[in-house]
Length: 188
Image 1 (spheres, one colour):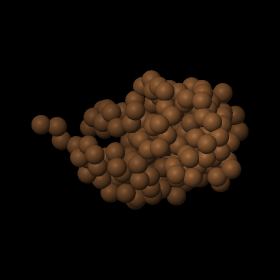
Image 2 (cartoon, rainbow, N blue to C red):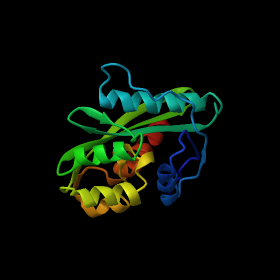
Image 3 (cartoon, rainbow, N blue to C red):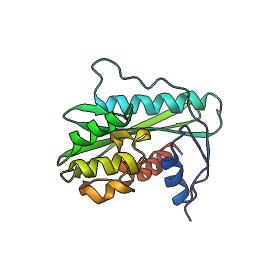
Image 4 (cartoon, rainbow, N blue to C red):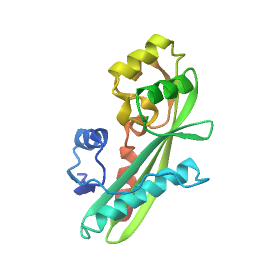
């Protein structure tokens, strides 16, 4: 029998909560107060891993005897980090940039247990179909883009326009749960 230890999720993401719930992982949510600004010249993988570690460590300070999970997801195209859009016009800009192209979704995952931290980055490639203006408007107005890296949710309206995924689907949703499971098992 597999036993999943209770986690403290250092994230306010509803998608991360949904994923953990869907696999039956018991957790409490405690949002980390952590500056998510990019550092000058920071590479995307280093950025998401640093944020995941920082969030996990910030929350672990209040839960020293618990297993704390931190995560951060971003979209990358042409080596540019595409975070959450600032407004609907920014969402339109992001979707135009992704239209008809492959991009990467990177999620940094960090586990803190007994003061020890382990972390890794999951990378998944995603290809959007060509998005005509009406498809972009549909995604902007119906897809709630403002709280999503890259301005889309693969598990919602954007699924209509995804031509391919190479790698972990759950990573694109917001949490590579297989990687979380591996890191928790390694820490135990």
